[in-house]
Image 1 (tube, rainbow, N blue to C red):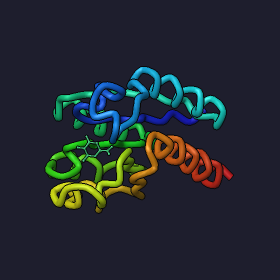
Image 2: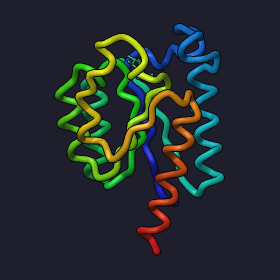
Image 3: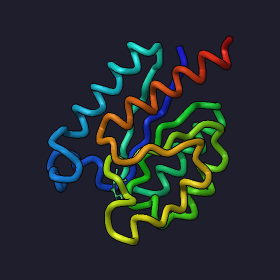
Image 4: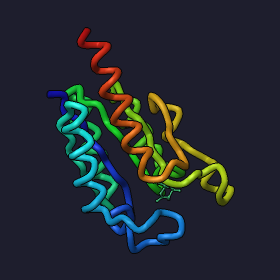
Length: 147
Ligand code: DQA
């Protein structure tokens, strides 16, 4: 079974409470459980994590690089600011960047994405369904690689 890390940056632990008009009513534990189920159906072992601490996220991305694990990443606010996260993402073979909201249709500062150039692909604006699409892509790509 292919192991996948689903890594979430700052404030995403407050899903369901934080600006539900933008991010929806589903809580982070509910999302995590849903993604583990999606993973099971796709034959993926999905490990869902969230941190508000940049160093911890850097360590997780290093783990993915060292172990060759595909990553689904919502860098949250770090998407717009963190060269350190961008540098870490550049070391990981497969990173699907996910944004719940359409960052291109929001404030100007959200249109500036420093991590995206190093991601394999980016999904934005499709709500929490973006995470499922990212996992579906990883499962399909891994199938191709496995033959
Ligand atoms: C976000 C968009 C970011 O601009 C914001 O800082 C977030 C969440 C999204 O999923 O839509 O925290 O990455």
